[in-house]
Length: 210
Image (tube, rainbow, N blue to C red; front, top):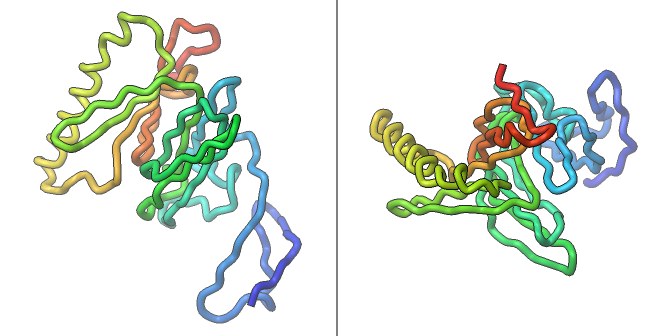
């Protein structure tokens, strides 16, 4: 039975009246508008940063790392933008000045590791032994871009070493990175969507690595 209810929001909790719940499983769908606290918006890009307990400022959730869930994400963005998320991109449909990008469902992960980045980025992809890694960036300095091969070599070597050391194949669908101007920290290890700070010489682009 489907019942539409007005939202009761009390002390950071959405309250569902007991009379509308059934013993066993219940499915609750919530329509909401996300706040800007954890959506870091710039003129030509945006990204999430939910560590350590800010996912609840972006979407309704149980915001604690021992409770995990799968995530399915689609983004409506300007047609010239590129997007990364935890899952693989499975389709992209452009309609005029906008496009909708859909990503594969994640494995169960804690809320603080949910992530996406979208913007007017350039993309570089490298492949080694069937594994493809992509890097989003906004760099134009040739000296910095010349380090691209070294960055990819480090990524591939690290993944290979960890798989050999642990005897476990990399368990997620992909490994991609985005170098984000003015990112608040040195980096954040979101599953499949790793964010790093760059562009220290760009006004307003200093990294906080403390």
